[in-house]
Image (cartoon, rainbow, N blue to C red; front, top):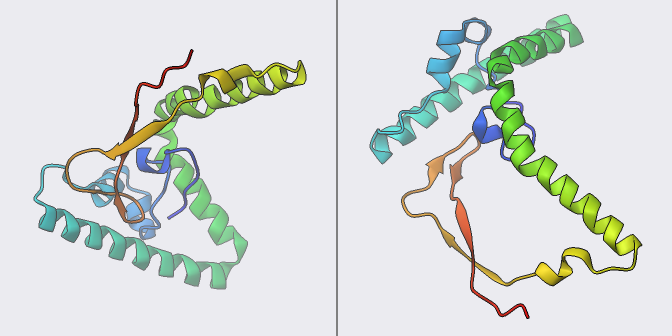
Length: 158
């Protein structure tokens, strides 16, 4: 698979290296990539293994194609991958704006405050404790996922 940043892989930013005939068929790709969220744990594990094995088969086909046809084979895979993920761009833009862009602006403001000799957000520092979200780990793109919820423990900030 090919992936990038900021929680987007689990939002579909990763493209499985499924065999070419699956990659070029939107319905076949979506079906091969999907895990049934309502399936029992054992069944989900089996679905994840089937998905992994199909991606490995496609990856090995891609390796052979690159060996036979050079970089153009990889460029073709990238073009197909871009078509696979195109419908998700608007959702990713929201994820980016709510996370990455917000943190970028926070950092920009902190640097400006420090440049003025002010502490900026340092006064807002807090101690937090993290607890895992309840339930089993999820099956992600590269393995099992456990998400954590940060919570403020109520420090006196005066």
